[in-house]
Each structure stands twice: as C-alpha cells, then as structure tokens.
Amino acid sequence: MIATIDAIDRQIIALLQVDGRVSNVDIARNIGVAEGTIRKRIERLLGEGLIRVVAIPDVDKLGIDVETMIMLKVDLGQAKRAGEALAAMPEVRSVRYTTGEYDLIIEVVLPSDDDLLAFLTGRLAALPGVRATATSHVLKNVKRSCDWLLPREGPQHILIVDDDPDFVEIGRMVLEGAGYRVTSAASGDEGLTAMRRQQPDLVILDVMMKGVLDGVSASRRMKAEHGLARTPILMISSITGSEYAGMFPTDEFIPVDNFLSKPVSPERLLSEIRRLLP
Image (cartoon, rainbow, N blue to C red; front, side, top):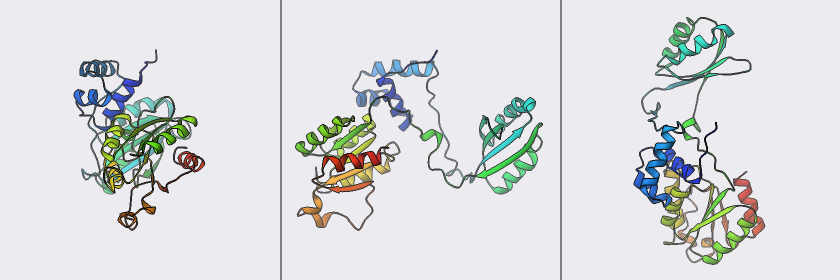
C-alpha cells in the first residue's frame, strides 16, 4: 500500500530537509498550526518510515578528497553476494543494483588516489564474480541526493516581494491567469520569512522597499541560505530610472537570474518566468 501525505506533511518535510534540527515549535510557527499537530505528524512520518532524520557528513570538509563512481559487471549468481559485501565496506557510500551494461554501481569516498588504487586492486579485485569495472572520478558535486527536495503537487508557486500593491495585484492577475499560484510580501524581511515557510518555485523581487536596496540585500541573504540558494530570482524594479539609480550596484555581482525594469508587459513577464521555470 502506497502511503499518502497531505499539504501539511509536505511543508513539514520541506522544512526538515532544509534543517533537520528545526524545532517543532518553529515548524508550527512557520506553517501556522499547533505544535502538538506537528509532533504527531512527525511521529507518524517517522513511524511509517516515510522520512528519516540523519546527519550527513560533508566529505570535502573532512579531508576525504577522492569521490568516485565505480560500475561493476558481476556474474548474476554472485550479484547479491557482491552487493552485500560492498555495502559492508566503510569506504562505500552507496550500492545500487542496475539494469543495462553494468550490474552494480557503487559510490566510494577515500582520502587519496593511493587509497583508491589500493581499494580497486585489493578489496574490489578480491570480490567473487566481478568480471569488469569502470571508474569515474567525481570532479564537482552540483547537487547531491541529500539536496533533492520532495516535488510539490499542484501549480508552481511564485512569490512576489514588492511594496507596490498595484504591481502585486496586476502581477497576481497575470500569473494566476497563466495557471501559477501567487503569494506576496511587502519587504525583504517579510519575503525571506515567506520563502522559508512556503518554499516558492520562483521569487519576483523588487529593489526599493523597506530601504533603497532592500531587494539586493534580500537576494544575497537568499543565496547564503542552503534552503533558498537554488530558488530562481527575477528582479523587477524602477530603480534604474529613479533618483537612486546611482546607488544600484551595477558593477557588483547581484545573485539574481535576470533583471527587468518596470514597467513590464504581461507577455514579457510570462516569457521570462517560463524560461526560468521550464
């Protein structure tokens, strides 16, 4: 029987994926339900095996510099035995049975190339049934399995962070008419709070709100937070045509995916959002 989860469960899981140590009180405050509800739901999610809260070591910071994927061709009669033996090795981070050219794929983390050579020629070569291997060094991790977020159900969610109620309302009408779900916030601080709680798929961000460069500050704070760093940002502002244009840091890196000057036509707005949210 396939387990079912609802919108509150999904919000709980999303917050735990960002920070596994977040308290029940903070989750309840973010979602807007009682702390007891959160406690019971987490107990259910854990009890039914739908989630696990674990510590994931950062091998880069621990001096384990070699991360390698190894594909193995194994005699079918020995595949299960080989997989179990590999899973018991401390250097092996994951073991997967696969279809196709290779029968097993393992992920290995080791301190050095010398250690990798010893692993390949010693421990791996001694496994019964292994007929061939292929080794691929991991040069850089762009996204790890622990960074994967549970996909949302329903329409994609766009958060508009802007203190101009007319812009927010027009944007809401255009975006909801195109099938998006829209919420709003009126400042960088409010926007960040909403982002942490709602986990939007994209943020439309003004510049001049609580302060002249409020949106610029908010964008930098977003990119510094693990749970928000990959959220696309479409910055839309009238600052370049205002008396504050000289304060806009055009010669500095601003961590946004694109900048548009107000006013923006509905066609241009939708075109840009479809580009950022394929």
